[in-house]
Length: 127
Image (cartoon, rainbow, N blue to C red; front, side):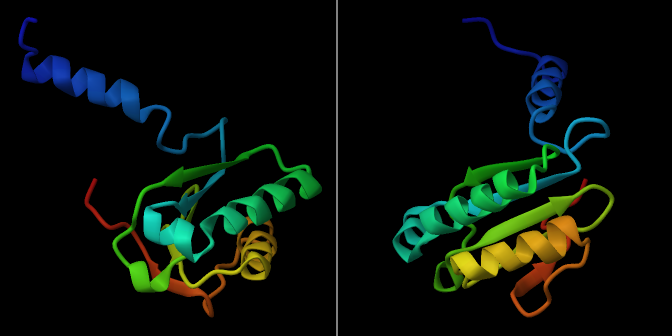
């Protein structure tokens, strides 16, 4: 197999990121539930279910629910990160299905992060 040039790798990376990052016109927000083994053991499946139930109940079509691996804070699982357009991401920890429903109502629908459940706000890496 031929080696890729740096420019070819950058192009492939940009194409892959199209589906990862929020853009105008597609989704205004994304809920990422951390589903590493520690998250699953702590109840992350119930958190995904609660977010999906709220999404369906509300009829909201512009929010994506997805999963990722471990976020590195096993003692704070189950965890989720909420990313809304033009605002810093918020990482929530020690979630329960009721807390997830509250986050959906307050943060996703209402636009205000739930400080009581938040572990941190802002990007973990530079652009």
